[in-house]
Length: 96
Length: 392
Image 1 (cartoon, chains in turn green, purple):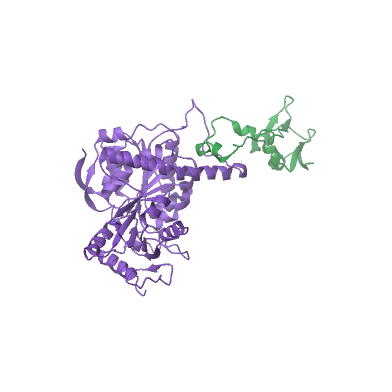
Image 2 (tube, rainbow over the protein chains, first blue to last red):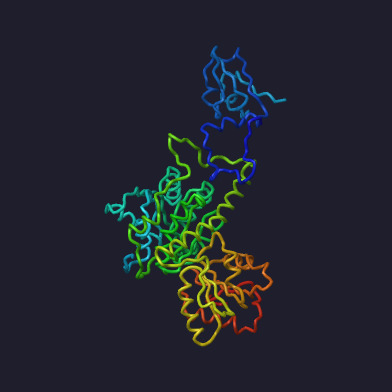
């Protein structure tokens, strides 16, 4: 985790763990949790956007050409996109 | 200074809370604390207090609403009892972990079952380790004073923790007592407008109650423990100021006739008042016995306890709750543990009594004290003894 920023010691924890920097959750790359990644077969993709809608992490991006891809910094590899993709354009493949 | 008035203590608690000008009150009625929020809703309806009274559908919501309002920078108050407190349980620990200064009056009542609406301390004991400051009042004046003090303590930047003020159900909530009510201007001078450390405001965005991964949870918990321990300093400071302003002294453990006492009784809550009468009677007969009234349950006053029991040969700890299968009542096991390292610690006898509204009389205290002081100085066989239970 390149950007992890834990308080050094307990004395440095803010009262009530208040986070005063808006949107700082994006600094935590949940993509580190991933065991599988989604791969799109654009010959089958009909650009319906179901994957984009169902992604619980909000990390699926619509590219300029209308096809989709996952931001792998945040994609946890849950596979919901592949499960929901009815033209069967998304496959989950093992990482590594 | 102040206004002397006879009033039911629950109503007085509401009047005291109103004097503190809370912005938001959220509560759900449950016996025996009901008169507190009921009277506050009257006060708001009459226009005597400019506050939002939220009629929630449960205690879970009551405490949640208080937390949300507190997070937005409001001064908040709630009250509950027994099962209501258990319904708040999920939120109790969150309130303290988020360091939100919620003030709660807790009309102590036995936990079901069998279903019982009367007093003992099993409700608060079940929520002991949630990181709240816990005060115990022994009479109505203390209830009024502690409610007002609590806002000042809870909201202090060195504290920022929720507080519960424990008042025995019925024995205190439903008793009429003559009490001294501070004037509005006196309370205003004592209790400044609440200035939160952080609040939910679009101009200063922040996140409260975030996820704590294993990498931070232990440090966050350690910091919360430090906050509860350190709150002692502020509590003592506020009590000193209270004495200067209002002339009534508060201490974590109040000593009564402890001079030369060889036997000491330790109580929490209203039974301390009854015990005083028993101590008076025994002292008149020349028995060297005194009373310790524990008012600050959390943070636990170790130093005060060690000082208070110096020279005491036999300590009798009264518990109004059971720790099933545990080493005695919750107060006694605490005291035992606190005195473990003291080589001159007194013998300790633990009585569990006054459960579910069972009366506690002066004669009961005298009997219990006599049993201990005349019993050949031998420790009881058991760690604790149920008193006044048929078949014992």
